[in-house]
Amino acid sequence: MRTVDLVVIGGGSAGMAAALQARKEGIHDILILEKEDSLGGILTQCIHNGFGLTEFKEELTGPEYLQRFVDQVITEKIPYECGAQVLDLSKDKVISYSKDGKFETLKAKAVVMATGCYERSAGAIQTPGDRCSGIITAGAAQKYCNIKGYMVGKRVVILGSGDIGLIMARRLNLEGAKVICVSEIMPYSAGLNRNIQQCLKDYDIPLYLSRSVSRTIGKDRLEKVILSAVDEKMNFIPGTEMEIECDTLVLSVGLIPYISLLNNVDCPTSSTKGAVVNNYMETMIDGIFSCGNCLHVHDVVDFVTDEGRTAGHGAALYLQKRIHKENDIKTIAGNGVSYIVPQFINKNADENITLKLRVRKPLKDQWVMIKSGDNLIQKIYKSAVIPSEMLLINLSKDKLAQITDNLTIQLEDK
Amino acid sequence: MKEFTCIICPRGCSLKVDDNGNVTGNFCPRGKEYAINEITNPKRTITTTIRVKNRKDTVVSVKTTCAVPKGMIFEVMKVINTLSVNAPTRIGDVVLENILDTGANIVITKNID
Image (cartoon, rainbow over all chains, first blue to last red; front, side, top):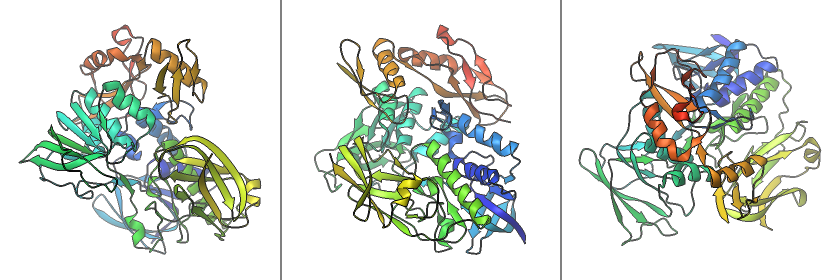
């Protein structure tokens, strides 16, 4: 069987960054497997700008950002196969995939999972009502609009105020559709503040909070939706119905890490629905690493790139047998924190470590407290925190040296 | 006093501009510039797509090379929608110069082979 030192599954931002970093650290035998016809991942269809401010200190569109990495992959002569759909991954890292109608297998010494995420669908959120055409996820609408050049509808309601929903509100509006409103079940938006401004307020598109679709109505094509207010327990409140005539309902109701390949290897997962990892982005399965949106859903691609590099670095250390295997410090999401990545830290890592976390709900004037047992390691003031903005905490080597016990991160009122 | 959400970067600072044009709430200097533009002449960069004539079911992404006045967005879109190109396309290829005298060029943002 063909063997490869490092196989990267997924040729998007995370996968390309991982492969490039591993190459930089001396790994020569690398293969990227990408299921689509070209490298790039989801950024291929994200034609809006705002990417690369951290990475390149300039504002790029999605395709411009990804091309810089494709160019590097080509310059570095890193082998990649497109149209390669991975079907199975085993614990001893045998990978089977389909390519050009053929079934291929190979054995990897190390694997980086960079498979991205998928969208929750109408079925997943159990939208009540008719199952007519005209109900589409925001990512699918984006692909039709930005890659194929098809309009998905003329009168559009958007359910969910995540960033893709907001971006698509603006996009469809620019292309001549009437975007009637965006409806969000939570009492706050799931999107970035800048997108509320530039995608909704700029075009006078109303955002209804604590309101969701209580019924879809249509025979063949969607004809109308009913929006109802919800109480704190997310139950519809009778008497609050708004009837809206529309031909399209765009769903932006959440992204879920795509890790079905990891199910076969009994890989432990966390509350992010991605794998449990340590500071090298190594999962609990020896030599299998994970990064990007298949680990936890990010809001900024620059951080995906950074995480890909960490995984590539980890994989290089693993192949060179220089990785520290002890996962001695656990990170614990305390009061107000919904998750922390990574879940384990190696105390002897001897390098700076970035912790990524999200808060549970929007709050003002908070201390982010980082404690090792009862010892306060660091506290950081935040004038405002919201769940849609991932917080990054850099633990320097000397801070790491002070850590003796499990690490808890929690919020405290100022 | 006017309040804005800064759109320059994902941080999304809450900016306040008082009647004398003093900006507060900005994390970086770009926020100050944004707030002042926002009360004097708000502008936006437009990203959209144009038809690729020699490929079936294909559009290519384009952008304005600088921000254009917010009030002109739909006029600019109208002109962009008349444009088309042939593949291959390269990032940075200029499709139209100085659209509607805004000083912005329309350039390709995606490589299609």
